[in-house]
Image 1 (cartoon, helix red, strand yellow):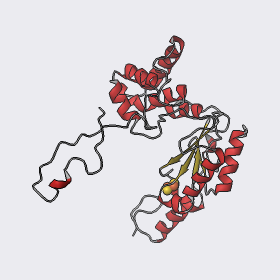
Image 2 (cartoon, rainbow, N blue to C red):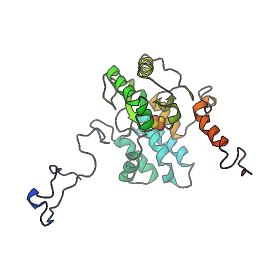
Image 3 (cartoon, rainbow, N blue to C red):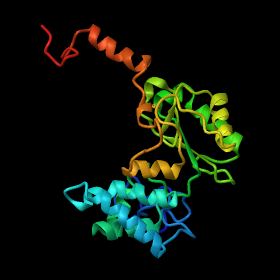
Length: 271
Ligand code: FES
């Protein structure tokens, strides 16, 4: 539902302020305005899949749904599946998930718009996510984001004209011990600087994806979405490349152990 937003202070006539609180109805706008970039339904977005695509997705969806006691529990993987198809969540993807899981399109949309992992606009081959949450921000996350946007000539959330790189801000990559952190297709590039991040996007633009600080080698955004849906990463060495916690991560664990609180390393209560 959409309605005009009243001017600031609308709803209470100024002459009534301080007087008897006779309030007028305040028309509220629910959801994003049509001109906001977070709209899920975009002009030109596919609203249905071709028959062969539908058949292929249906077979993949059946594999995913079979892993859960209740079909609707497979919604998150299915959203990754359709994101792998389109590069973002489209009306076609929403309808597909709804049909496969016997949900309404509204229910699927509610979930898809809750998680920022599901993109609402076309995404480049490489999604570069710059953390600007508290710790990364104070250590330079905002400067990195500004530098990348300037360098690529895009605003946060934008994609380069060649479709290679999308740059966006993200909220906490869950790697605060390596702040400031940049992720490319959800793989970590730790302790970044503006210059280092520029080198990363240059390499991505030139088709030379750099190795992440830890974890599996990069693949395209759509391939990543398919892995997140739950399909096997059969690239040689990808799974074993997961890595281990490094020094900044282990420092906290060591402090915890030194203070001898809680259970010991074997899970036993301390004397
Ligand atoms: S604040 Fe940036 S990874 Fe947590």
